[in-house]
Length: 451
Image 1 (tube, helix red, strand yellow):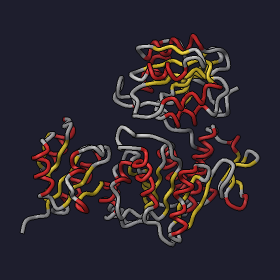
Image 2 (tube, rainbow, N blue to C red; image 1 turned 90 degrees about the horizontal axis):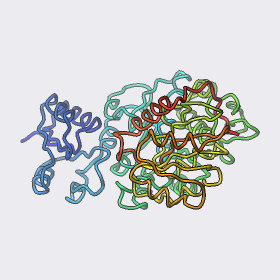
Image 3 (cartoon, rainbow, N blue to C red; image 1 turned 180 degrees about the horizontal axis):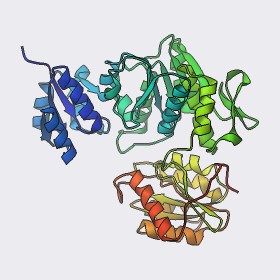
Image 4 (cartoon, rainbow, N blue to C red; image 1 turned 120 degrees about the vertical axis):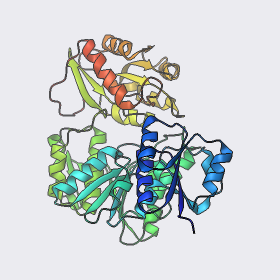
């Protein structure tokens, strides 16, 4: 009788964590990677497993069909041949694999925008409340790495890629922040993307708690599944829900004040929504309001997410490079009255025309990257728009357009992979170019609306 065989597709951080666990459990593991990096080769060598570099379809089919289990890493596109082999229940994602090995409750957070921020806040709120907690998943630490945790709770950021391959995944507290078109370069269509997100509540049952954005129609409609399953439903929103904002105060159910908005370092509209979602999630998992308040007062935001990075001549400069969808750009711009927008990059198959909805607050647009012609077409006739061929030129154009009281915002609405290896590299280059242009670091900023 041979050892159980497992094929791991994609040997990045998540795939390597899955492979390491499976080797430790006695599986005979083979890995496949269509873009074998030096890092992938080193991981395979360290684990003592075979690594197939971009095998042809026939070889892939033979290896996959001989495996007892095929583990697909996040980011392996839905168009990959592995999904067309009819593997049925043998096909599983890394998150599902890790969940089956969990010994503690899992709190899961998904949404088109805000996942990392909310998971970071939930972790801080629980820790401030004396709850042992570990954060993992799409936030950067593979969920498999914490699968052996024997106490406390795990809070997991889960993407649509990860949720698409779940079957038994069953978080005790499951939060869905929002929904907008995204990743249509991965999902075959918007319906597939939505169905993947809905998997966070697929296995809801009595005793579970779902936290839902009641002001998002897609999320609200999907929450009917939770109610029908007999699980608890907790709603949040800026103006409605159990957790909401009123009179400049963030309120818990029953009208109990968590914190005043004016006390927060970050208080753009989406910051308030994220804060409410995090508090609702954390309290559902055992945090105290005092712990939530302490974490919110300390939180200064995450890099590349509407981060104030410069100030000169009465103009503030913000790095929002993480905004890779039109919806995330629109959410960011709601906090400003007059903006010079730097947008563009590699379109992820989304309708960039949605950006025109923000033209009322936009003084001018600087278009960058592969999508520059699309950006120019969107804003033509609405405001001045200029296409440029480098970030340095983008900064120079934005400085020229901006007037005292304006905000210059790098909020691309597109992926970074035309010019950069990541959104972080793009944001760092923006800051570097600001310094070259004589724009110094900003002083303390409250996060209030500009104006």
